[in-house]
Length: 397
Ligand SMILES: Cc1ncc(COP(=O)(O)O)c(C=O)c1O
Picture 1: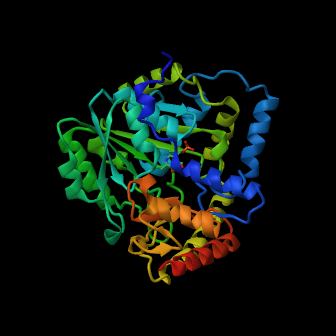
Picture 2: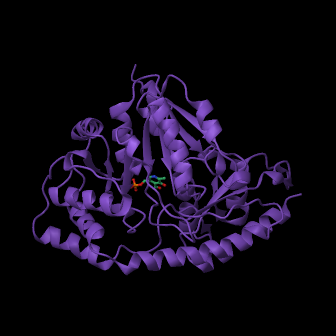
Picture 3: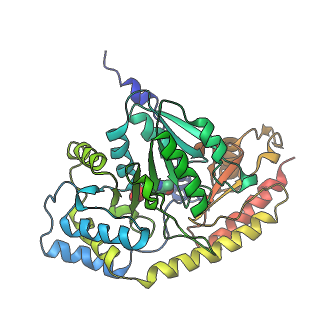
């Protein structure tokens, strides 16, 4: 019989992509839908980065590069890690991939055996559990709570460690909650990682999107974690380059060489033209980044006030990234016409079908009490979307 693998039957499609897809289809059919699901900045890639890509094409930089990345890009990444993150890598410790997502995939393929457990805090980025499962390992979510502003719960983390634990993935600034872990948080996590002698994979893709007094801190810069930490980053969010597909990771040489071996058999090098553009992104300072972060901050403040004024919503102020993850569970059990809203999926469907506003149900991120909205869209769209959400909540009885 022609059948698919057992593994693929246990892998979920990205639910964020599924909902934004449905919203797009509704929009395309002529409906006025506000989509608050975007996982990417609504700004263009800066001009000088696009010019670098055009020059790469004109100069025929259009062939395979070294598997791990072209030497000028690896050099730029080594310098970036030193300058921004206090991370000191040799060139053999860097791997450039087709997005941070592939970086995480390669690393997990390189370190996991069947039955290994990989921890991450919930709410978590939707892809972590699935990438862990693709590596034949077992995902384990360690809960955090909105009451504690989604800060890492160190005691819960300690309890979650077992002899099978292989790695912990951390993501700060965080998608979906926006929490930014402090240096103190990182040191507490680091001491658990060291005691348990496990890997820590730090997903720092939102590093540049931080507000107020929040400061990004790389756990890999803690000296005692040199052999344990793998730091993942990319250009998708900071430089509005989601479609270019460039991510990178730095870590212990043995891990990175093994991850590079995985890549040789899957994609080979990341796109050569996008690599050249990334050299420019990482080496030429740009005011566009500050403009983008200031716009996000203005929107964040606007959305926070709106959500805070809704009686049935519990919301925490995010310190980074461009999402709100807010609790609507006091509305569960209420009705609209004949439908009872039982959970975040029902709520997401109700908002989209009856009020034409797309959100992502919290269940996709491991917390069914919440919804995620993105503020990577104009203030006018946010105004419209949030008024619809308010009306939708008020209509539930
Ligand atoms: C937490 C997190 N990590 C990684 C990624 C993927 O980044 P990339 O586009 O570099 O694959 C995303 C994208 O949404 C994300 O939210």
